[in-house]
Length: 122
Image 1 (cartoon, helix red, strand yellow):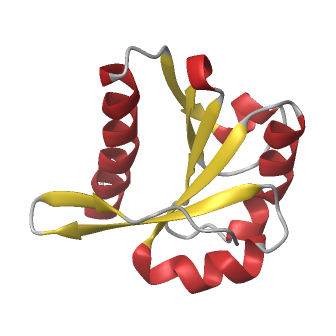
Image 2 (image 1 turned 90 degrees about the vertical axis):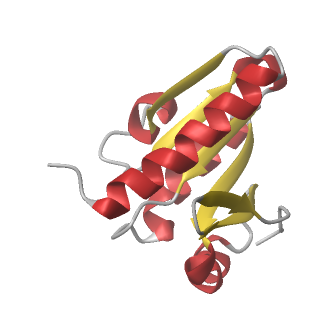
Image 3 (image 1 turned 180 degrees about the vertical axis):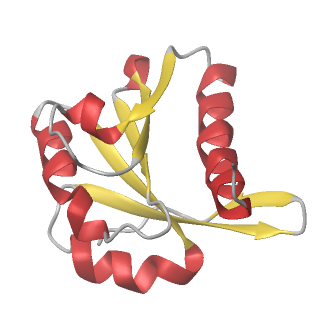
């Protein structure tokens, strides 16, 4: 069963995949645990190898601090990490990820449109 929130998050990852694909990048969407090599880390990540970008989707019910070890591992191996957070969770994400080697970027829906804010330093 796919919940409405799951569809919304899938839409975020899909939008990121399509944006990088339009640039001609090789793109993979996978679980954050698989990409980082840290078991049990929750989350989805879109990796665009050609530009060294790893965009982590903050999922409902996940404390952003749970993602921190994977974010640090990806950054330490050369990836430019961005955490995509629902706009209403940006304050929480800023507090949890302050000082981590990643950017934060808000997303929200405006009707049927998926919108992204500017990247911010946590």
